[in-house]
Amino acid sequence: MRVVVSGGSGFLGSHLCEALLRRGDSVRCLDNFSSGRSANIAHLLREPGFDCTACDVTVPFRSSGDVDAVVHLASPASPFDYGRLPLETLATGSRGTENLLRLAVRHSARFVLASTSEVYGDPQMHPQDEDYWGNVNPIGPRSVYDEAKRFAEALSMAYRRSQGADVGIVRIFNTYGPRMRAQDGRVVSSFIRQALEEEPLTVFGDGSQTRSFCYVDDMVRGLLAMIDSQLPGPFNLGNPTERTVRELAELVLSITGSDSELRFLPLPVDDPVRRRPVITRAGQGLGWHPRVPLEEGLRHTVDWFLSQPDTLVRPRER
Ligand code: NAD
Ligand code: UDP
Image 1 (cartoon, rainbow, N blue to C red):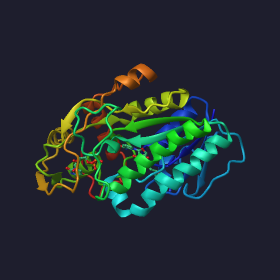
Image 2: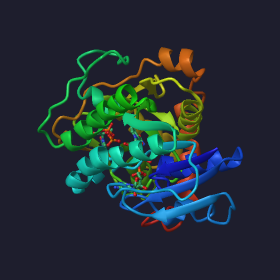
Image 3: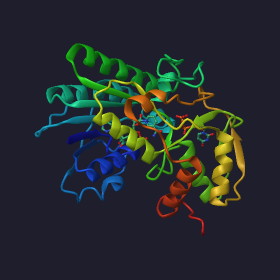
Image 4: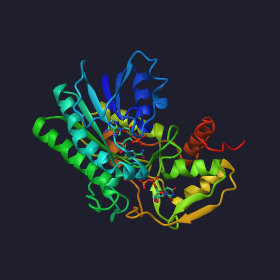
């Protein structure tokens, strides 16, 4: 397959590009490097089937060659990134999504939208299945991301209904692993960096809020299954094992052997209280189920951070 991956130099995108190349597909990555890193794809540039175009997907893109699938991962994704790029986040979710849908329609290609558990907002239903419509504050600080993704879902379904586009939507829950940026503000990367630098771990609120963390290899298998499917979804993709943020902090401390303390800071506005996916539909439709337990995935991630001397400010001697 010839696959266009928007956001291909980001955390998830670079792992997906690598997996596609490994199975023999050719990949064109589109990225503006606003939160992606060239280091994530430097090793792929040597591969004959890989090509990266530096561009912004809010500008229409034409492909010279044929395209069999378009995977739309481009978007600021962490609260820190969409907080600093609010207008860009809305533009990427709206204009960017439409440009990539048009590209897919022109080539009769499969289109996969990377949506998010954030479409459920601060959920009033727990755990969350795909029939839940969500509880999103449309004007709060998270709305630039949540509403952009909700609009992107609506647009994708409208293209499916009105243009016959082969659209599939996945709703991704918190995913972690190697190549997260140490400074992206997300909880897993922050806690690991802080633990390795012997700094206090910044727990927002009392740490009783929950998330369900999925290892990146599992997520990539889910994305590949969605690319190969013709189903529209939406499918929740995530690991249904739910942990409090405080439990995560303690796990990171025990895996790293760090003596860091916990520092409790105010909870950000509209921070969702609980989040856990129901993944029955992805199991039935895609044959997908996550395999990597949190402890194992965190060890891989810690090892990766330790192997990146430039990532840490004060790398700790092991
Ligand atoms: P990331 O920030 O590492 O990757 C996003 C990539 O998109 C970056 O390389 C960035 O430079 C690029 N990008 C952003 N705007 C662009 C634009 N206008 N034009 C071209 N490129 C642009 O984030 P990630 O964690 O890899 O997330 C990838 C996708 O998965 C995002 O759409 C995100 O919303 C979704 N998602 C991720 C998670 C998660 O936990 N990682 C959870 C839910 C949804
Ligand atoms: N969080 C935290 N300390 C941090 C970063 C995040 O306690 O340094 C909390 C945050 O308030 C949220 C959870 O961890 O409750 C997950 O945050 P993240 O930004 O990783 O993802 P999201 O909120 O998008 O799920």
